[in-house]
Length: 194
Image 1 (cartoon, one colour):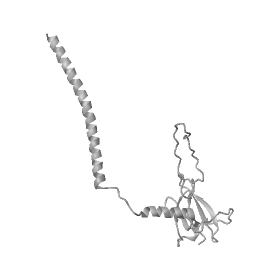
Image 2 (cartoon, helix red, strand yellow):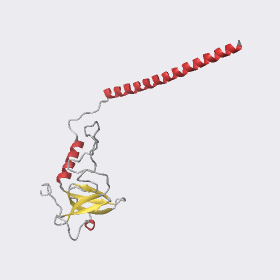
Image 3 (cartoon, one colour):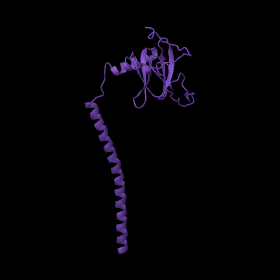
Image 4 (cartoon, helix red, strand yellow):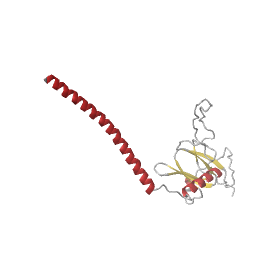
């Protein structure tokens, strides 16, 4: 008799544990669903009360458009190279803005797939409106101008800043120059002739 009661108690305990575990799993699933629902509800309320703004004009966008125009069309400017310490290394008047050394005229990536056999095309990087493909670099090419306004190129791995205009008061002894220009750079676009 004790054996039958012990077996019955053990069986009931196993059924109770199985039910508890199953109920716990369902409760856990329900808890996650309730939590996700609460998060979604919170986001919905925030979107309703703090909507994403919409603007008729963006100075930030216009500045980017203007900077792209200056980069593509060129303008006289001043480049200043500085060391990490902030020390002025050199400066020069420029024909256009400095160009990162990894900019390219051709895209090294290629389209893969998309041959009509249910394969997907891979997206390639998009070129800039100025007709170049960008890369990551800390170095720049700067088209400096000598006293006669003839351009010469300067490659620099230090920081190079640029101003779209003439900067007075920079030390003459730090102005970048060459004794002889060995290559005739093309400077055309109208803005530099004005």
